[in-house]
Figure 1 (cartoon, one colour):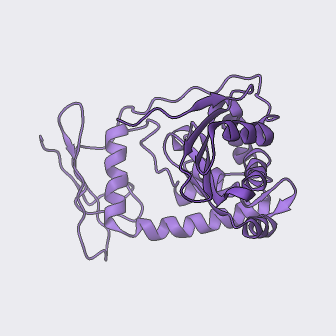
Figure 2: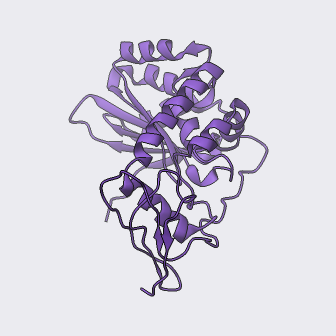
Length: 278
C-alpha cells in the first residue's frame, strides 16, 4: 500500500501533491487535468490528444522555438500527453531553477496560443503517424476490438483520431476544449524530488494562484460504453499486410470480438463476418 502523500489545495481549487526525494537536486513537476480522450466530440476524435500536444507549440506570445529555447536555457526536460481520462504536461529541472520552470509551465498550460500554422503542422504530423500505425494489422485489430466492446461510448473511438476527424478539427474546437477542461478546479499539480510540502505549496501559489476558476461547471463525463453495431466476430481484409492479427474481448453477452485480419480503413471494408459463442 502506497503511503499517503502531502496534499493541499490552492484557493482556486488546484490540488497540490508533493513527494520528497532529496537525494538529488532535481524536481519533476506534472500538471494533470482530470479529462482526456473520453471528452472528444463524436465527429472530432483525437481532439484532446491534439490539444495536449499543442500546449508547448506557442503560448503567452512566445513561439514554439522561443518556448523550446527557454526550456533549454533552464535545462528543462518537458513532455505532454493525453490519455483516456487525463491530460498532462510535465517538466524535470534542477531545484534552483524550479521557480522559473514552473512559470514557463504555467504559461503553456494557461495561455496557449494555438496558432493556426502550428495546428495545421500538428494535424499533418498526426495524420502521417496515424496512417503508419493503421498500416499494422495489430493496431487495427485493437481499434476494432475497442469499438466492439465500447460501441458508440466515449472509449469506443480512436483516441488518436482518424485522418478524417483530424482534418475536421479547427482552432475553435481546440480552444473550446481547452477552455472547458484546463481549469484549476480540474487540475492536479504534482511535485516530486528535492522539495518540501511547504515549498511546493508556495511555488504552486506563485505560479498558479491567479489562475481563475471559471464560473461555469465542468462538463459531465460521457458514458464510457454504449451499444455496438459490430458483430462479435469481425473479419476485415487488409490486402498486402502479410500477417494476421486477432483480438478477443469479452462482452456482457459473453461473446468475443475477434478481428482475424484487418483493413486500412476499418470497418468500412469487410471480406467476411461470422458470429460465434465464446
